[in-house]
Image: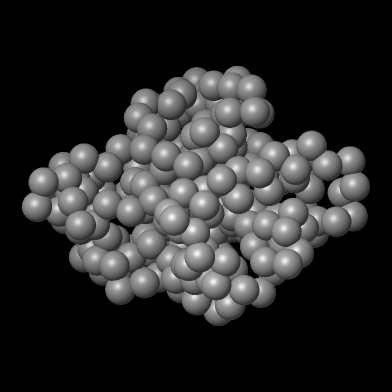
Length: 233
């Protein structure tokens, strides 16, 4: 039986011109996750990572504290675990908010910027899911789900029995994977996605070529004195 840990990246640079970089808090989250895994004596045999900067930065910060040798050995980069282009999904829904500075200004004018962004994002995703004009997007909803499905299929093929695998990825990918494994209807995608904590763990088990979800969005290590490390965006 193999254990697979889907690890959402640490907090990225929301509101900056380049979202795809960890914030200082994101680096702290990754290091604290490593401390938690050390306490549990969880060590990966293999590490997989999306090729986005925030994925690799989370991997590097975590493994540097957990198992430095793994920074150079037993790991691979796979675009199957990349997030969908959330900025494009929003820009198609609200072209007037495509510019990061315009988005920042819009959110600053809202009574609750976080709530306003979540509402906007959920509406943009719903349009993406339902759109019949796939040419509006570089990757349609169907293509995204197929990519995640292909990633899961490859994972099943390449994971030896009794392996422990870490996969550094994003919330959308984790949500789609869970949705597919548990046969959850697609309309629930955003309800899963919006709850996923930065550097939270979703654990899968692989047994007899079948994946099961063991935990979803584990993040108890960001409670108590570490509550300041708990973020969703």
